[in-house]
Length: 80
Image (cartoon, rainbow, N blue to C red):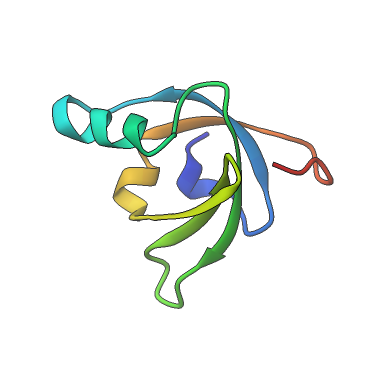
């Protein structure tokens, strides 16, 4: 599953960061590294962008970028 499919309050672990060149490097530089836990905090009213919590901070990314991040969804109640 990809990060854009995770519901509000849902948590997951990043398994892969896809994309090529500058996009992939930018996502990795922002801390979206395989093995990192993430939680979806908010989604904008029109559905884009999405705010996620990871590594102790909040990050807002576009849905197009979230579609490049493969995650493994964690069971409900496991926090990021």
